[in-house]
Every structure is written in C-alpha cells, then in structure tokens.
Length: 274
Image 1: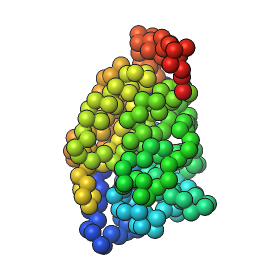
Image 2: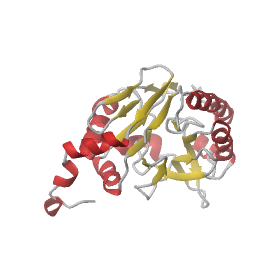
Image 3: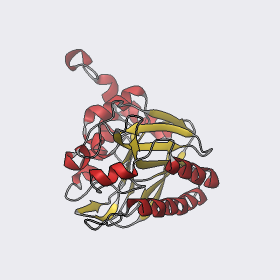
Image 4: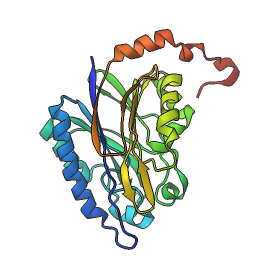
C-alpha cells in the first residue's frame, strides 16, 4: 500500500538576542501546523512531518529551551493531538521534552490520526554546543512505529550523519526513516550527498525535513529531501517555505533490495554488525 507523505519545510522565527519569546512562537507554530495539516490532508497525505524542534524553535539557548520544555503528555502534545484528529492525519513534530527528573531532551513525537501518542524519540547524537548545552542525549537508538502497513523509524538531524545509526534501523526492519532536522548553512552537503548515500547503503526510504529562514545567528539551508532506496530524489525542497507531498511505495523498497544486495552481502564475520 502506498503511503502519501507530507513534509513541512517551515521558517524559523528570529529571536533577537535578549528578548526571545518562545511561548508565543509555540502558539503561532501550532496555528501554522493546523493550517499545514489541513493542506496535507486535503492532498490525501496520511502523515505530516515537521522540522526539528518545530514547536519552540531550536537555537534559543539552554535557559530558554529549559523554560519551554514539556513532558511528552503536555499541553503541546494535546494540542497536536487535536490537530491530528481534526484533519485525520498522523503528525510527527519536534519539541523539547523534559522527563520526570527534569532532564531536557531534543525529541520528536508521532501522534496518530486518532490522536493517540504512538512513538517518542530523543536525539542520540548531539551536535556542538547548541545541542550539548541544552539537551541530554537519548539512550534508545531504534524507535519504530507502524503506519498503514509501513514500518517507520525516527532519527533527528545529526543522527543521520552516522551510518551506524541508519544501518541499525535497516537491521530492525525500518522501511521509511523520518529525520526532522534544523540544518544550517554551510552544511548543505548533508541533504545533497549524505542523505542519498544513507538511503542507498541501508536500502530504505529517508525523509529529511529541514527548516528555512534565520534564527539568531543560524541561517537554515532548507533543501528538504525524500530519497528512495535506489537513490532517486522523490522530493527536493528549495530555500523557501513549502509543503512537499510524495508517494512512497513499499514495493519499490522490495525491488531495490532485490537489485542491490548490500544488506545480505555484508561480511559481519569480519567487522561485526551493530
């Protein structure tokens, strides 16, 4: 069964130094998410994916992030659930998650079209000071969920740059790897080169969904990519706000794996398999 996927390449809000207002931005982003979900559902999409840390912004600083972090069952999750039910579409969104011990994680959560919380993933590979100052790393690499017969897996931004992380998903049966991201310039080589390579070498679909615009000193690159396991670019984002719609057919995955036998030809007796 074909899965129709919607990728929201959305702008980041500029937070002037000394006067961030992430709570107001969160409400604005929820309103924008509602509008995007309506458009995605009208186009027949079953799943809408947002960028990394979509609800609050990403480059806010550790203190601001801690101030707006929520539990996975918090007010924002409930608001996203209402949007999902309203438009009958599953939503994967990025947000700052605080656990019961007060530890903050960079997380994504999947809400089903019925409003149910399906899966939650915490970023495991932290990028530079912007991540390490604000977040603790997640400890569970492979988080999966099934949607309309397709096995989904989740990574966040920098995670996908490690081949071991993607291969772990392939070994666990992930068919579509969803990667919300906040990639800034000058790292455009990631969507252009690394993401297609990961899709080919691990034989799965990869949806890499990025921000655009300016957030403090970060200029986001856009260039959202949805790549098939044979390396075909099924959707390519520009440097503007857009909603990309793409159909993913699991039969293409099976055909690609029949032709490209990387997974079965590995010499794990020599180098092991993680």
